[in-house]
Every structure is written in structure tokens, then in C-alpha cells.
Length: 136
Image (cartoon, one colour):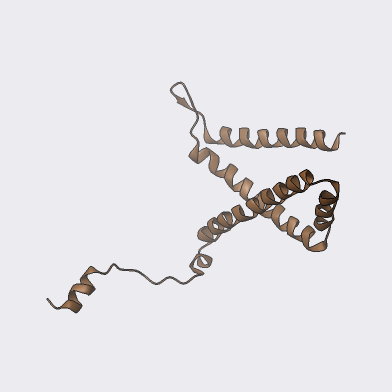
């Protein structure tokens, strides 16, 4: 066996994939958008951490931070962040009954009940936070 044949035998098959392979299948596309949405969730958290840090630096630094958030670019970015965060949350709630099997004794709770319970908890907590922040 020649050296060239041995090298060929030791190589693994690596199919060539284009960078945008996931655009050709709806399920892959939705999965990739969900994965990308995590970046926007992290950006949302990072923005608030910067706000807390600026708050510790004093009122002037915090007011400068708040004025930076009032620019049209920042407002547009927050709309995009909101849409991605909502998509991320909704898709996670849809996955919950699949990844979390609830058992009571020997019986398994129906997945639809787990899904409804998650949505109800989300709505109740959102209303409580809305009441605490806005005060009706």
C-alpha cells in the first residue's frame, strides 16, 4: 500500500456544507433563529447589568446611561430584542412539556396541562410585576 493510499484511508468523510444550509428547511430555520435569539436575551441582560453598574457610579453616570437608551437606534434595538426575547420564551414554553415529564405517583401529567400551567404562571407573574412597577 502506497503512502498516498494510506493517507486517503485515514481521512474521515467530511461533507461540504454551505454556511446557509439551514435556510432551506423550515424546521432548521426556526431552530437556528431560536438559537440566535439567545444572543439577544444575553444582550438584554447585559444592558441591565450596565444600568446597575452605572447606578452605582452616581446619578450623573446613570442619567447619561438613560439618555443613551433614548436614542432612536437604542429604541429600535430594544424592539428587536423584545421580539427575539418573546420568540425565545414562547419556543421554550412549547418545549417544556417535552423535556419536563411531571409525575404524580405512578401517573404522568398530560403534557398539555404542563404547557397551560407554564403559560398561566407566566401571565400571573407578568401581571404581578406590571402592578408592582406601574401601580394601578
